[in-house]
Length: 330
Image 1 (cartoon, rainbow, N blue to C red):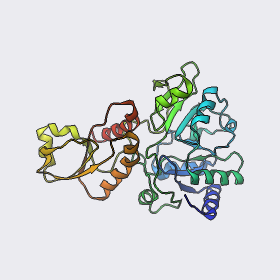
Image 2 (cartoon, rainbow, N blue to C red):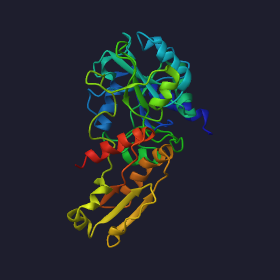
Image 3 (tube, helix red, strand yellow):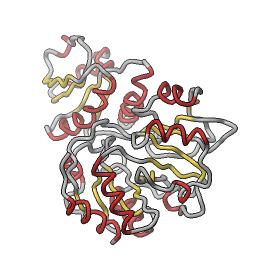
Image 4 (tube, helix red, strand yellow):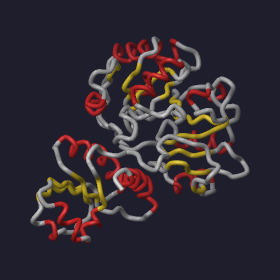
């Protein structure tokens, strides 16, 4: 990927001056700010409409000194960093005294990752030349609860009038947010707090232990609310077409159907429907789903019907995102 040194230097200077940068990563585009600049971080909360007690993820360069951010780096963390960083894996670790409460929601832990995108790494490196122990908090660059952006144009559509430095890094390859793994509680062991591209199976191969599912005492992390990742128009399960009253509700509406199987839905023949076929592989589906939802939004459809996703473990991450989107309109 080609990008100019000028773009990278200007982005780093923007961050140093307390500005916000639309940062491309391999997962989704982030709205970046200097993690140690309280005013800049507060602006992220304000611009996104994000609750101030909702913790943020710190993004660091691949060669960053993690001891600045973490009071302890367990052996399991070191193994996973070696295996998956830079990459779509966020680790939740005990925070150091250097980490302010305004990025952790007042918790004793910090969520941290190193993104696998050349522009993100270049900006982090340049920023570290301007500021010691540089880190960037970068939640998804969208209004809180909306579909995450996977292209620069999505971010511009979301924030057309805000003073943000935009960087076009092409389409995000992974297409959904990072896996979040808690390693802050040694007696409990590794716990998946948010599924993602790095799966339980991937983690098991490195640690020899399968991560547990989220428990009631687990740290609060990004993307954990019941309703999230939702399009601006209603989205419902395609299974609802088994209900005759629901079918009648669809008449005289423009309906988008997102599907991945070879099934046919002849019952909808008399309804104004546009079909959006996505790949049947989970990783390829993940890379396209947010872009597809945003495309449907732009086409003035009245509602979306989503075909149910497989229950296989490899679909956990996409199923998690879509279940939260569906919950918004229940």
